[in-house]
Length: 460
Ligand SMILES: Cc1cc2nc3c(=O)[nH]c(=O)nc-3n(C[C@H](O)[C@H](O)[C@H](O)COP(=O)(O)OP(=O)(O)OC[C@H]3O[C@@H](n4cnc5c(N)ncnc54)[C@H](O)[C@@H]3O)c2cc1C
Image (cartoon, rainbow, N blue to C red; front, side, top):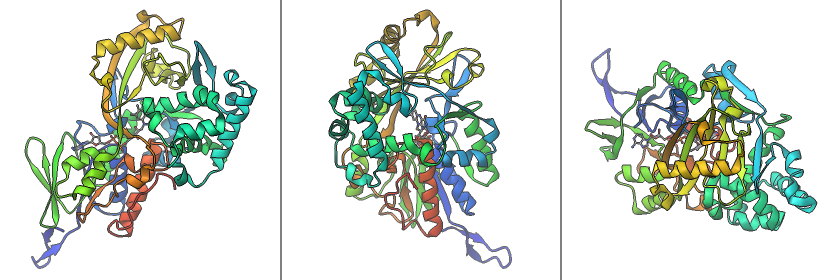
């Protein structure tokens, strides 16, 4: 705790503890917002020139939109509540966008449960087993047990091999790439729970939403509100080390400069946190570094013509070099893209995948070749801009017995916490879950010094 001078008699009195949050993604921003709401003295420190992290925008062909595709679901209650606080409800648009599955040269609609059940490639027995799997999983409450079962074994047992390969593999690959082979059944369970979230909460159907202007608008408004609530935001400040010193923490900045705080919350991936923080025990460090992450290579394409007007297409065929096709302009009014179509072709890869060595030109050639094979009306001449984003450590892979190996959020250094998307143990990683995690963490801090922090799941 720092000391300030008492205005009345000049004697030093303890001032409010100073909190630093390292990482200005949606997690860091929400935590800063909630802690400031509790009257805490908060500084948010972000390495990038702007806030937002994975949700931040970039510019492609003169159009500013999300660097990584983002959709809001009607059932994303916590995110919607924050949008309400930011005054963005009226700028949010809701759309019944379609989801598809590409199998052997054909695109099938799978936008809702009825369409899943009618998916012809499965046959009647396969359709029935798929329906049974979804219904069965939606009734399970004890997700922990599922963490010990490989997703593949669980799904083949419930749905049969054909339905596993036709339906479940493309769905898992769209979020995990080839890492789906490492996933536990708990990942599938959380995906099904998310599919059912709208119905569980009384909504008739799920819808996709976006804020006009994309996440650029959300982040801009969030930053304004943080400023109004007294959060100090420091951008373009990469923290290189967090060192305990005399009961406080000194943050070394890249390029020189030191900042001192009483409490520090690091919201970066756990591997980054492990490198930053001095004085952790070996056991803590190895738990932080043993979390298995995946990277994403995510080209954005600005096209003069749409592809097929499906928001998301999962892919069964093995020769596609990307994990899914996301046609943002099937959801967002194309006037936001000056009449163009905006498409994302993400490929999720292990952090040591040789694919990461490919240059942008090679990626462009192989990805456009695949689009030509998949969409007969697509021509290379439709491509106005092809721009590749590469981001490491975007998501922890939900491996077997994942939560048993996770490092706790409270470190052995009193006043230092590591809270990251890796701590979402029973939800699929999304902004909604990130906000829930931040809010549950903030509540634990409000109740004391964070002693209650263990492994908080995303779900309330
Ligand atoms: C391709 C893709 C598609 C997605 N689609 C959706 C979707 O449709 N819907 C949805 O809800 N979610 C989606 N997500 C997930 C969502 O974007 C993330 O869950 C969320 O943005 C994570 O926020 P975060 O704050 O935990 O992490 P991050 O956004 O990674 O924030 C961490 C921040 O820490 C900063 N940082 C790192 N090191 C330092 C340092 N040394 N010093 C200071 N700062 C540092 C980084 O610059 C970054 O800003 C998607 C993610 C990806 C990658």
